Image 1 (tube, rainbow, N blue to C red):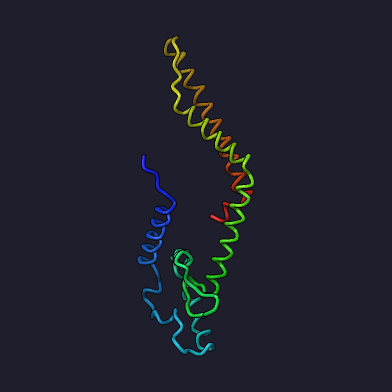
Image 2: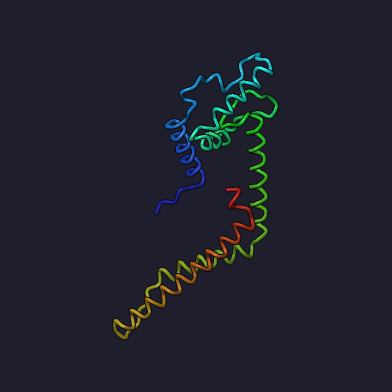
Length: 180
């Protein structure tokens, strides 16, 4: 069985985002200069143009994908206001990236602090895997075998339910639902 690494998953996500943007972005029909500040452009002119670009982005069906890709690509600069991407100015992208980093760090910290919960999750997952792989065999004929399989299936369902409860509570408590 091949498992995807987190790096591979990030690369794949980037490709998916870019394909969605390429296929459905409204800005592909617009003047690209609308989204970038020209060299030497007066601040008042750029503010009006930026507001128009942001309004244009609001109606785009792939705005959130564009915003995510801008965040992934590190677009924006908190010292220079010179672009609009995903319906956000460069400084807004920087602020959002910082906020997401803080939320993710807080979630990781809370996650690491809950080692007991992590150990419970791990042990339940191991137990569930062991139970699912076990073949209940005993002599006594088919009716007995069917009863053993039924009991095993009940045990697997019980373990899966316990695992789901702990995982859901943990994600909610540590902020993973929001940060991820």
